[in-house]
Amino acid sequence: MENPIYLQSKTGSLQAIVDLNGGMLSQLYAIKGESKHAIFHQAPWLKENYYQDKAGLMEHLSGEWACVPFGFVNSDSSLFLANAPHGLPCHSTWSVKELSEDKSKITLVYDYPQSNDLKSIERTIELGEDRVYLSFSVIAHKDCAAPMGVHPVFPTAGKDNELELEIAGDGMVYGIECEPKVSRLVVGAHFDALSAIPLQEQYHNLDGNSSVMDGTHLPKPYHTEEIVQMLHPNGQAILKYKNKGIKVTLSWDKELIPTCLLWMSNYGRKFEPWQGKNCCLGIEPIAGAWDLAEQSIKEDNAIAKAGVATTVALKAQVPTTFKYEIAISDL
Image (cartoon, rainbow, N blue to C red; front, side):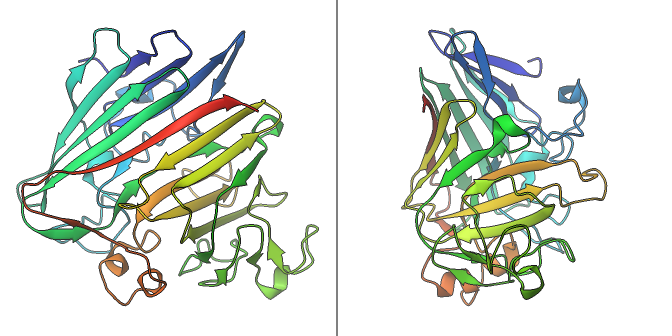
């Protein structure tokens, strides 16, 4: 089947582009009268015809995708590969299992190599009138535990994409410095609310801040790169784009995937291919310890010590299904 595949809801209120290279929902459009709002971020280095490029996360970074297993490692194992951060599926070409006649729903499938602990993953994308319903089902060759999640990325660049973020609970700053000499948050710090994340001392009282960064308003007026993990987000994140007049609500199964990683990319990465041009917000429901895959499977990692699961237990040959959705409404 030709790549990409175009989907549309029954009344045309939502349109989508599905990229078989990575199995990504690479873009979602909300049609409001004469306006067409792009809901997802797409990396600034993507070529016009990037859908034809070889599979690979960096070559296709756009929209949202499944991360099974989630995170990155420095060496290969039967579960993780060092050259495939966030799992082989988002670096590989998927097959179409089923496409509805009206092209409002698609099911994709990817088979892992025989040597992997995981056997296959099946992913469904269905456009409703005001939301997209998403799910993936993963099957393992043997009993195992894996960090996993999904990786929606939303735009924050420019006045139209200024947003307010609502997400419940406390959190922890990334366990290592996200970008040395660029990131401003206190490594490993616990915070009670996203509106008050501790800053390193040298950044106190800069850019209108005191000793904390308010993560509920993006983009920031300075270049930075930050990752925090919300420990008790209650299965929901709400983005309010007041200048566009739309609200985006991400909801997910909090029993299977308890936490949510926030990747705040604010022009902070200056190296290739980023070149200081990337500005976005990743809202990533995960079971994991940040994106540190090897830490995630250890019982003594900092996130697990806070009382939340950092892996999903998989039974051999038994599908485990994760469901989530993204709704779009007027403000």
